[in-house]
Image (cartoon, rainbow, N blue to C red; front, side, top):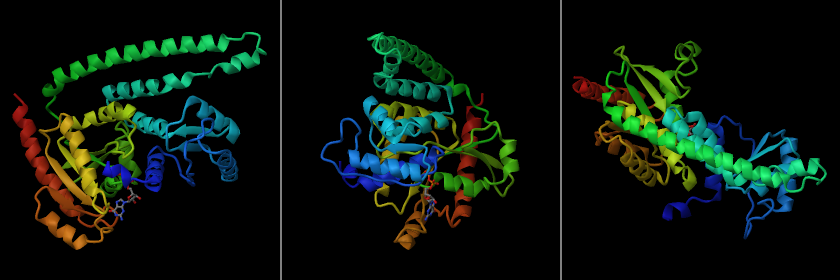
Length: 359
Ligand code: GDP
């Protein structure tokens, strides 16, 4: 589609770097190569392999991430070529890692585990050939048998996980409506990766205050407490961001990590309004939200990075005219009071809504 066309190599690598950052890695450099077809053995050409090998050793790099999915053979050949100690992974594995870190509910954890196993299954090939080498080729075929055994075990585990997921889902559908008394309202941030969700979260909560973090040590690291100036509090929680190039095999896992937002009192949809594809990103987020069970939850849209937008004055006026939009800059702090006021106003509504459910 049009969106994909304008999403070029550099944009994709930028997003990959952002994802690596989200996963807790420090990005020291990136590089790309234009080939008619990827190299079957090493994905990139041999000259590029040497170039990257030299660079990673000079910079003392631990991990090299490829923006496309690699085969088992390519992963292994690249690790060998780079010299053993360096971990090679691909975009899919990186995203799975993030989902794994962010899976806040049992259901999400199961869904992510399932996706991880399905990712591993075709990559088990020849992992065991070292057994044959160690034995000096005397037990030829032994590695192959072991792969079959491993694959069978993995397939059985996948089957078990799928059944468990079904049970958990049924249970959630039955009990969803019973959960009513939330002691403190939860506000969930949703939106594209790079929209500025975590900057907003940190800005609002002064996340650098360690004492506060320790108080809430039982919460996952992406949830913070915000105190409003009327003394009332809410929990602000960040969700996994949307990704342009989400591998289709990860769609179910991504949705599962978002399921938890159905428990929140308010959804805040954070948009990078300075992004040329802002409207497409809004539409994509709305589409997924409409497929989740969140229709009853009030929503607030935040147009972030207004400081960066070329037509910021026009954008501010437009936001002012719309009830459902607040314009902010998480970076400069512009508009944050308006944001808190808007959240407060909507939470009041939602608390009434929650109380109305209590028998
Ligand atoms: P997330 O993926 O949605 O959590 O996005 P981040 O909070 O990590 O922000 C992505 C990038 O956008 C970072 O480099 C931020 O510094 C930058 N950013 C966030 N908010 C603003 C803003 O209001 N203005 C500008 N100019 N940059 C911002």
